[in-house]
Length: 550
Image (tube, rainbow, N blue to C red; front, side):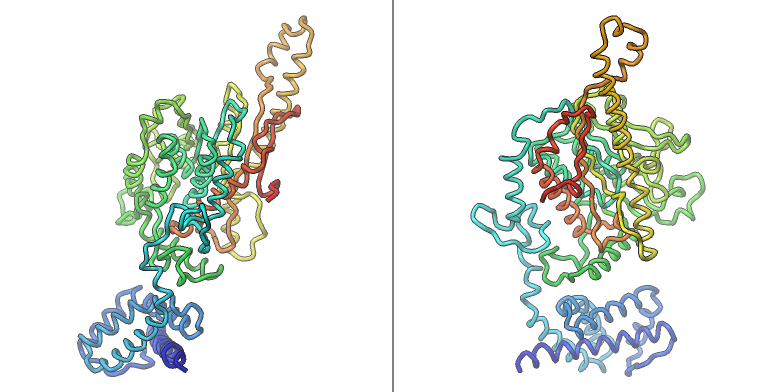
């Protein structure tokens, strides 16, 4: 009985109040007529009129009222519904107390109902005002994990165990039998946190690349890795991704927030809202919308060639990356871009260039969102326009070396048949930006097999033939070098749509980071992935999702 009086009845009454208000508001929006309009003071009517004529504010208010009312009336996430309505309740109460004294009794009743519900749902709100999650990886967990002896409070025990295995019993406990370790990072915007998670997993296993190559967001991640000492790379990657992603009010507390709506439908709506916010307001420290629009800027100016200004990115790169360290050559860095005038694909490489922030920005200058970047009198766009993966650049480099390459793809070439127009757009992006990685790998395997066979054949020639013109001509093409190509491919969730590459919410960033880290840890449990091939082909590939055992 007490629950009916203090929880159920206030929930239903408050829900009905806002449902009626939402219906009345939408009736006015579509017909211009009021369905219900209680007596209001002249000052109150003037305030209402200003709201109704303010453009998007009135429809947004009524939409939030409707969502909150439905949450309360259906008793599905009622605490979340009340949280949505709290700003409106505050505004309505102030409206009546200040501008419309005749509505004070209704305002008091509404505040009483709200107070009863706040008390009833206080346990659900408490995590929002607590200390927060402890530990760097606690924020990645999708559900709260209990602690156990030896596991720091707030840490994910399974993830702590994974790291211990990678450090103590993993394949990297001894030097790897390769002359080169390469990390290849594809472009993919907001999905790039997956690559940061991959590097985190490699670093925890003691595997440090000596060559990082990237395109677009992959170029940014690669530059952060190459431009910092090993012990600071993960922290700098975390600083970048924490900086460019934002947590909307409905994401407060992250996955541990008991008010966070669950399920694919709710997550789809939240992701779409976050993507819309990025389109409207940009991403802090990355890009900002141009005001006025490029359509109003004078032709021939940079402002007329893109919807967003990437000047904030330069400051971010300069604060996180030591470009002197990059150009010192301790780790090779390659970033791909496209010459706007010639259409030629270009790699800015520490072997041939002095790398600065402009080279990294050029690799990520995807039109028409971002402007071309001028370097030495030429203008460059995002390399993903031509090829979104640096795989060929690394594999075709000379001289060949025994290579362990981690190819980190943000777009999967494999997928399902689309069922609606949104899925069509998503699938089109996946196919386009996967850049035929699998086809490039298969082509390289065929060529390397022939090079290994040629090398074996030349070794078997009698001395008289080894010095023949034909043998000398073929010798440079012969190779006994081996290649391990490890594919780490982000697999999209069912709630992610065609906006996933510009959906810069902190919630999604944490999920992407965790996915990259977890896939790396699981991959390193397979010793065959890090064992050089013994057959004549000289190339072995490994994909956790097709060859993994766990």
